[in-house]
Length: 405
Image (cartoon, rainbow, N blue to C red; front, side, top):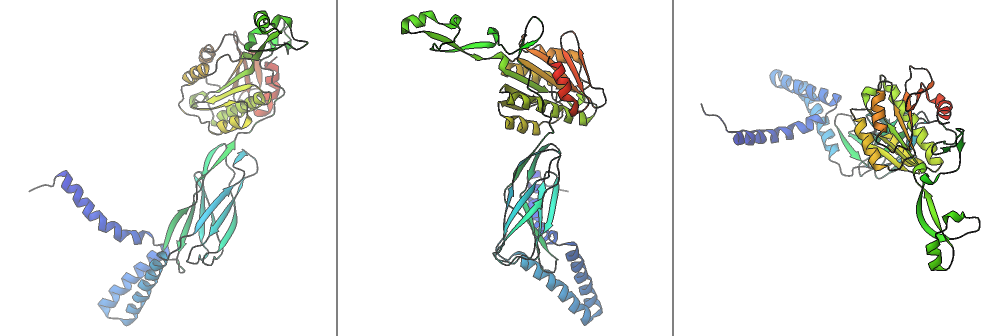
C-alpha cells in the first residue's frame, strides 16, 4: 500500500483545513443561545422530513432565519472606534484605584447595548454601554481594579458586536494599549546621611575631603576663595588670578542594589518589602541631590529624578537572577560611588554580600538591609559591615538613621 510523502500530506491537510475553517468560522461566532437555536433547527428539520409535519418545518425555518439574520448583522458596515484615556498612568500601591475614560464612536450600524471589555493586565473590566445610534458619540468612565506593584497593559478595548436576538457575536479590538505603572509603597526618610565624612571623634561633618572632589575647570578668583586652589602658572599667563574649580565625585553617588533572586526571600512579601525599602532610600537620595543608581536584575533607574527611581521599581521582579553578576555590572557602571546599600532577604549568605561589595571602591561606605517580615527590627555591626533587619516599612527610618551615624 502506497504512503503519502511529507509534502503531499501537508498539501492535503491545507486542502482540507481551508474549507473546514470557512465552515467552522460562523459556528464559532454563535453564542450559547445561538447554538441552541441551531440544534433546535436541525432537530425540527429532521423531524419534519421524517414525519412530514408542517409545524416542524415552520419552526426550522424560523430557527434558521434567525441565525441568518444574526450572521447578516455581522457584515453590516461601520465598525465602532474606541479610545481609552488613562490619567494618571502612574500610581502608588494601595492608593486610590485609577479611572480610565472611554470614548466610543458608533459605526454605521446601531449599537444595541453593547458589551465592552477593557483588559487590565491579566484581569478584565466589563461594562454594558447604552444604546448608541449610528455614528453617535459616547463617553464612559471605567473604574479599574486596585493592582499590586507592577507594570500593567491596559487595553486595547474589546467590543462584542451582537445581533438583536443575541444569537451571533463577534469580538473586535479597537484602540491602543496603554501602560499603567504601580509604584511600591514608600516611606519618607530624614535627610540622607550618605556621603558625609567623619571627624576623629566619629561625628558627621558637612565638609567634603579633597578625595571626594575632582578637578573640573579654571575660573576667576572670587574674594573668599581658598588661596591653596590658585593655579599660579595659569594665573601668570592670563594676568589675573585663576583658581581650580572642583565638583563632587565619590561622595555624590549612592548605589542601591536589590537582590532579585527568589531564593533569597523565604516569603514573597519580603521581596515586596525589599523593593519598598530600596525605593524609599533611592528617593531620599535623589531628593538630597545625589546621583543615584537603583537596580534589581536587568531593570535599573539612574540619575537625580524621582520618576526614574519609581518607574524602575515598578518593573522589579523576583526570579533566578545572578545577584553577584548584577553587582559586578553595577560596580563597572558606577565608578567612585560613596555609599553602597544592598537590600536583600533573610536567606542571602553574608559572604556573598561581602563578595558583591568588594567589587566597589574600597573607600565606599557599605550597609546591608535585610527585608525579613518574621524577624525583629535590629541593627548589628559585623566585621566589615553594618547590617539592618527590617520587619516592616515603618521601622526603616528609625533603623536607617541609626545605621548611618
